[in-house]
Length: 219
Image: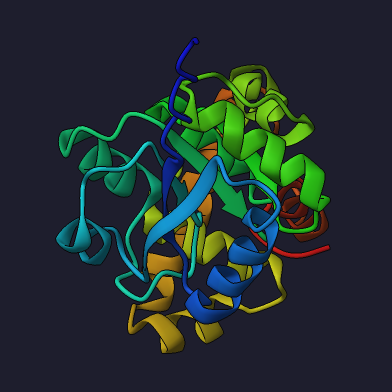
C-alpha cells in the first residue's frame, strides 16, 4: 500500500497596510476557501511586521499612507534585506510614480483593492511562488520609462500636488513653512524635469493635466 504524500504547507503571507483591521479581515475571507494560503502576520509598517516574523513566502505591501511615512523603495529594501524576496503591491489608488518606484525596486506585481477576489487570490498565489503577477497596472510600471515620468523628489511631488490642485505659491509657502520664492523655484524645477523628458509645461492647466495623468492628484 502506497503512503499518501503529506499536503504541502500553506504559503505564509504577511500584510503591511494602513487600514489594518479591515484589510486583514478581507484577506482572511479571501483565503478561507484556499487552504494553501495563510495570513500569518500583519502590521501597519514594515519594521512592525519584521518584528513579528521574517519567515514569509510573500509580503503584500500597501504603497502609501503608512503611519511611518515610509516610501515603497525603503520598504522593499528592508524586506529584501530581511530575506523576503517575494513582494506584491496591493493599493487602492493608481499612483503611477509610486507604481514605477515599486517596479524598479523589484516587486513581483501590482493589484488594486478594487480588483475581484479571484484576481487578487491568483496574483497572491503566483507571487508567493516567486512568479510575476501580471496586470494592467503592473504593465504600466514595467513600461514606465516610456511613459515620460520624471524622477521628482518627495518635496517636488508635494509642491506639484498642491500647485496642480489650485494652491498659489503663497498658499503652498504658508502650509509648508517655505518662502514663496522657494516654492516658485520648486515649480520651475518641476517644469524643467518634465521638459527634459519632452513634456513642456506652459500653463497651470497643463500642469494639472499632467499631475492627474501621473497620479499626483485625483481625477
